[in-house]
Length: 334
Image (cartoon, rainbow, N blue to C red; front, top):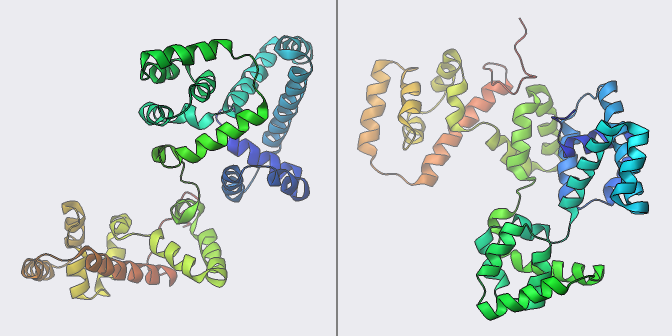
């Protein structure tokens, strides 16, 4: 299970615990993790018994290790885990727990932020605030930030770092929230895009055509506008090259010539050649002449024509007259 990431493990654990317990746990999770775990749960069709047992065992071991560390520290935890699990497994559990706790440390957004962005923000903060934040950062990044301050402030910040012994969790939490709010305008590149139409389309593209149809049908009933946006994104004009020659020719026979001419404006040469290879030489010459005569065109007009072609593709696919491959689960059965 070493190749299974933490989010997927959490999803499998929640599935194993059942909906009643899982719902109570998810209520305690941050929104970003709820979304991530929900997507994983939605994509898991089958959990093998041995996989479930291994993840449940790992969860119990991690919980036990955390309790030991809270009771008597890391050495105490290592001693008890060595006796209970053996030295090799005990080390693995302690290492995993340390990684999790590192991610849970305060000012995680500062540790992830671009160094220059972080420096620009902290230059405007009070020395005691800067000192506290640097205490929780990677030494190399903290050194880079500190070196950007004037010499007299470097000395003051360093003194405060050296004399900090204990800080109230409430104070840390308050400062962390202030810093996170200020980072919202500084650290745009460090935010994660979770959810949205793009994420849903990526999932549906891999989920299999049968499941995709059911999900889209549900969306059409509940969120028709979202469903239309998803359907438009599920197959783009550029994806036409994934169709077989026979299917492409079926599509092209039902596309208006004016729409095809406009749709081919600005596409790659490979894509244009692919379309031309599926037309008669006479049709190709006509389209080339029309494109030359057409001249420049607005992007919005081109995209509208491309979407008309996609609409034809989706319609023929829904009728079963052509085949759009959707993920590994959507294989052809002979």
